[in-house]
Image (cartoon, rainbow, N blue to C red; front, side):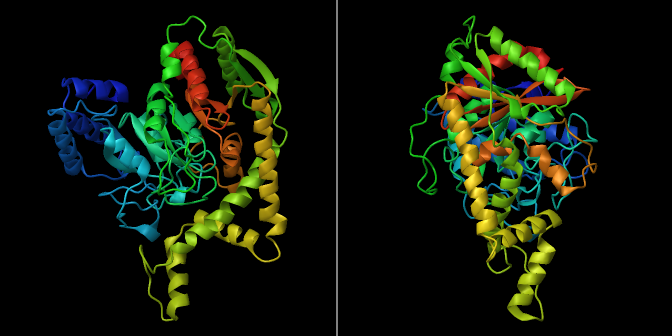
Length: 494
């Protein structure tokens, strides 16, 4: 394997070569670090990587080589380098949530999702930049500065998992982990022209994910193609005794359906794709609309039936999300007080003064804004009017999806975002920024699987198409995504 080949290799190809003995894991790891240096992934350029340790990663790869020389043939991710968002706990590398308040913090334990990937042979090579505590849609809210989009360095990569999306798009790794609370994997996947997949809530353990909004958070995956995304989710999925919200439901093979149908002339025969009219407003960018129409035509040619549907409470998703998520954030982030871990600023005003000084200096403006908003909506006299009402409307949004899927729809197809990646610094109004997630927050509120995949470009910038399925219907989602990916071919990237 040459260093020039590495950015184009898929995870499954790397693992196959490692298991066959034709490529050494240490060479793969070195190629990943060389690529990071080559594209300027450090703090002074794209600003993708916050924390890494090349010597430790190479040593881990060499240990894997020793294991492979024995009876073991290695796992499905043998030797595959992965990047992990900085709000997912890892052993050895810091977990700071891109925040000053956790500067230098190294977790004493590791996220279950990361452990499961390691058990299948994956090697963690870096922790990636993100919006502070995953609160943002552009990765401009990091205490360590913004990440830049590898497609156009003047633009944002999306957020909050922008560093992980950029790591895959720039060819540093074939798979990266992000977290989703309202679209923080799908939106940056769309902006960076890659695949981003979110599972059903409870399908992947949240143990080791620093909590933002506990009822909305999902560990999710970025990849260069649908096959690798399905592989990553399948490895991470399953019940976990460390997470009481993880689902004790058998995990099927996400890849079996689409692999077995890869040579079938009409692989989507019998599949019905719903097109929700609320996701195609008159204001939708014409170029994005045209690419969605082209994708829908491909789906018809693949044998799918396409019909329009309605999700009537969609317009309420943003206000509901920005009540529920900040409310849960204000509760979850109360633990960052300078007492047990992280930064601490002393104060002459005693314990209360230390709390005030530490949190004021440690949290950035967006995190502060959401804590204050969440505290307000949970306060006495406002809980029923805001949080309780929002949860009731959230149930209506979930019912919209349940009704559509019960009516014979297998998957929904929508644009992932209303625009392409915007220039860094161009969106300063918080509400305008929040609207960039208008097509993605609904799946988090309903807890259903959803993914973004590249479907073309407008003015040279990537556009994502979104597929949404019912609870635990990831196999259906991946089946349609894979078929569409094969049909689009090079069209997806031009």
